[in-house]
Length: 226
Image (tube, rainbow, N blue to C red; front, side):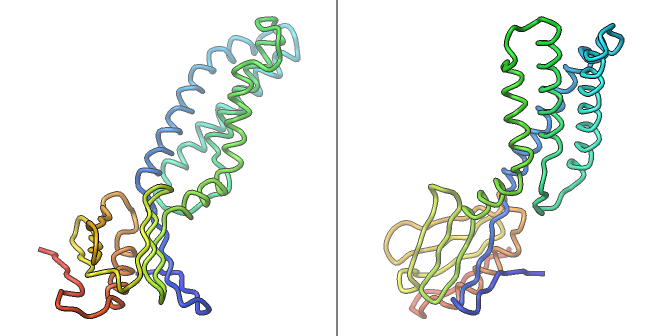
């Protein structure tokens, strides 16, 4: 089922490009968070029997953050959708655990400064966890296809973007692996479908775009499904 965003006022069709590589990068970040948490577990366990009650409390806080990280990471790894959740719990859990570890090291006299590298890394991780939805939305806005009466606007990234008036497009070719936009002048531009999880939506939008290309001696749209 295709789900374009259509604005009746501007007569535009907007398709967001859900990049598969961004999802892979998020999975790698989750893996790094787990690795960091595993290293902190022995340190937390060694302090839960400390004589100082504050040190024990910090150790239990660290282990609780690690446990929350493991539980929420399983949920995030099971989520295969492109929906934007408000918080990255793996980043948040890893960040809180690092903050507790930094406080423990400073309180135990292992460091003289409160703002250690672990503390700064933890604060950064917490910030990224809380801002996940906004950061993902910003990246998504950079990757989109806009079809309007004026022409075709394709933005694959911050640096890869093309804008054509309909009169500047010779034809649009669709194949299972890629979409080629052939301009009247210049080299063809390609969109590799394997990079995106919503390939059917992208293909459907470009089929609509092909109908707007002025009729010429060339084929308006060529779908090669063989």
